[in-house]
Length: 351
Image (cartoon, rainbow, N blue to C red; front, side, top):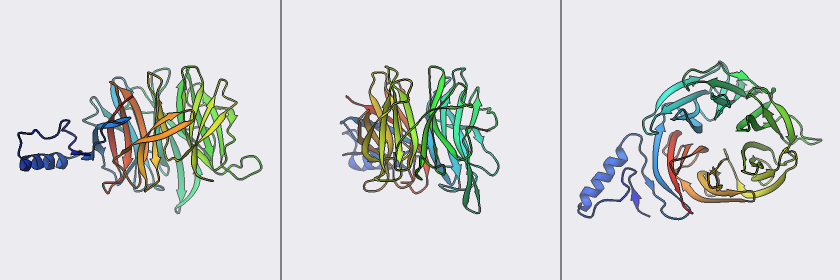
């Protein structure tokens, strides 16, 4: 594959000398915030462009991406490292997804806010859902989800606790005016065993939740993304950290109490997926064989097939996914350039 600068979509012109071509590529690669990648052409998916959009904190990680009021918003956690400390939630805004500026920084004294997820409420507000962990002497002593709301992406309500102590509601998806999500608890016993518990919950407003069903999934299930098919069925992608660690895919018709499960055959990290207007499903997550990478995968009720590896490595993944102007726009974080930073890729999906 040809190594190409992101500002070049057609390679060096034949009339340029080899020296001029190399010089031009070096200028492109040195340009601040730009990433040179091995462009993966053809196949099911190909990278159109890739930018590093933020790296100001010591550790920048766990992203999400959304379109709101005709602008782009990207959120992620800023902290000293991957865990512990007082994590803060940065919100970036951009009119063109090229020039980004900080819109807000959410914090809570003594609390590690992390894994922020963006959604738009039925009344037109932007909502952040995040985990809230408390450490003392480097030891986790408490955890409870938080939410905050904004009418413009800049001014936010104070973070508010939801659900109960020990839970982590990792992401919600709005459907017919209600927010659906899966909360996991690493301390509460599941049945007569000691496995982590997982339950499906629903809310009319993003703050008050009631349980719909418990998921009978072994192997320490945790991070879960839900979406809704055109026929009203709910599909879930679940990360597992126990057993063989392979993620599970679930499918359920309304009222979402009876589920059928399928094993992906892959270990996941920060799983997300999107349903395109034509009904195709695409997922993104961390891939582990050969070292951690962020991958894009064909996805379905019984299939998870990685087809594109993004420039990434080490501490990485946790993608946000938006379909816009015929392209998949994907935020993620990675440490492959030495420092955990936030990246934005535009990806063309082929038939």
